[in-house]
Amino acid sequence: MTKTRLIIFFLVFIGILTTTVLVVKLAQGYKIDLGKRVLRPTGLLAATSFPDGAKVIIDGELKSATNTTISLAPGTYEVEIKKDGYSSWKKTLEIEKELVAKTDAYLFPTVPNLQALTFTGAADPLLSPDGTRVAYKVDGDDLTKNGLWVLDLSEMPLGIAREPRLILKSAPKGRDFAQAKLEWSADSKQLLIKLEQLKKEENFLIDATNPTEASSLVDISGNLSLIKKRWQKEIETKQEQKLTKLPKELLEIVQNATKDIIFSLEETKVIYTATASAQIREDLIPSLPATSTQPESRNLEPGKNYVYDLKEDKNFLIGTENSLHWFPTSKHLIFIEKDKVEIMEYDGTNRITVYSGPFENSFAFPFPSGTRLLILTTLGKDLPPNLYAVSLR
Image (cartoon, rainbow, N blue to C red; front, side):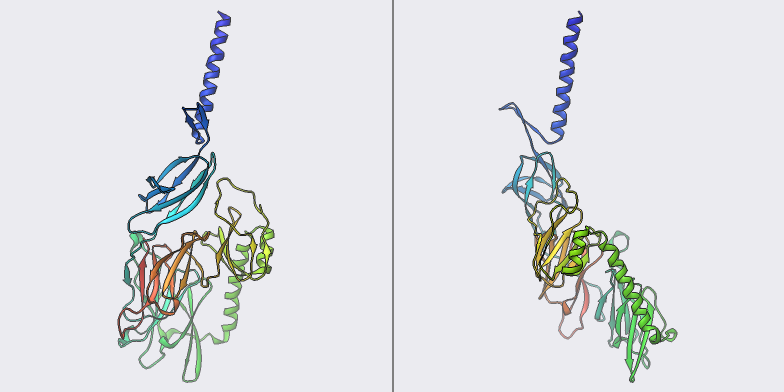
């Protein structure tokens, strides 16, 4: 009886151990090959998209719809995500055993809507440093509307847009603020107004969030240099704080061989332009599992733009485009070309045109929510330029 119990005990123990190992392996993505009676390693593809419900096509074959997880044998695959009315997303992805690769496809509409935000003209629009406000001037036939205006780009609950506000009204026989030069403060809360009339220069500092009466203005020309120095110090301090997040070796390269350094909104990535040849060493930070498998460039060439991912220690060549800005997703770059606005992913893939048409002075910037694009354009003959929103969702 004792010998029989021992045999049964060991059989049960081996059965439990085998089942546990099998469950763990299946959870890790292994599949049972019944034909050869072996466990085959697989990786997982988390096919996500915004908006969801798009088709997932792998090596030309329709597999599923987002959002879903697909088991694949380790290897390289051509993955495409498509949805009617939206631009397609394509990438070559490497699937590794027991790891999860993600698509995180952000799809942009192919036929966006255009909505007017101003109707009385918008001259010389100026975006605030934090991208949440734009100041502009109005100088039209309706004297009650002439002066300085501010449009808040942050949306209210339920996506309701905010109305432009007249913050400083021009006087019919007094100061004409539509002729002023504007400058934002470093914190995007104030506007510096430089006005030259009757051979006299005046400088005023106003609150950009509330209307100001012209009669209450105080000329701050005597303190102008101190104010600008303080703003510049604030900008430099913020940039220095961000730079401390870079690996030490990369920080030295950035300080000595780059320019136009711009961090993403989440401060997890940085775009820069190389000014001299340099090489970024491999493994500056501990490597993470399931990092991007897109080709990177760690040898810097002067005049070219790059994006460094602080989380994954990846450095991607972007090209030589000018006027590059971060899109609010922190995963895309937006840049301006003649009569069109393009967006691409931070690794240089999926470059698409989100707006094609006339717009003034290359003025095109995303709303903080990423749902719309702000442009300055004229849609009618003999009409002044106005601000318009181009829908991106």
